[in-house]
Length: 147
Image 1 (cartoon, rainbow, N blue to C red):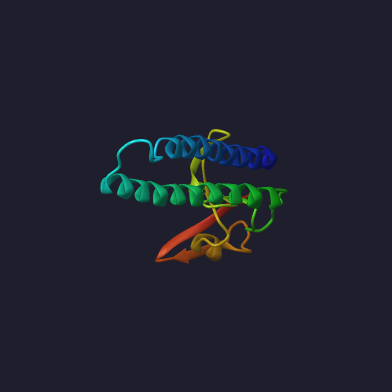
Image 2 (image 1 turned 135 degrees about the vertical axis):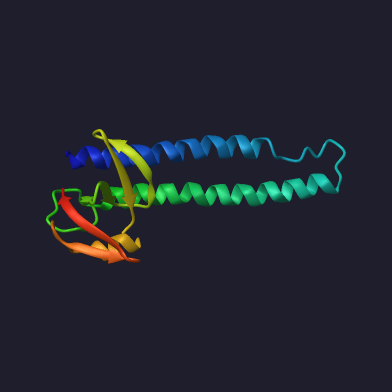
């Protein structure tokens, strides 16, 4: 499996999320301004306050995805002999890439789950080799392959 293409797919996914968040935030902000040329009441101010809070939350999500891009760019995706950041690991019947916490996506005909180095599953597998196992909450994970 070409891990450089996998890295590019992760980056593409994150860049698409950043682009989408920016468009949605701009639309949201443009549609929630108070028109001070019209009569306002307490509901207008309440709605504006809630919109500001929602906008701040949206900006935080945007920054998470921007941080993901920086993290992915910094990771070495060359072939791995042990489970480490940048490794693509076949665990039981799943494929997991150690990079950033993200939802599953399709790559090379397989479902890939991206986890961060802070994830408990990564902490369990960290430094292990093909054939090794680890256990979390009475669930056994067998490392079948590392790419």
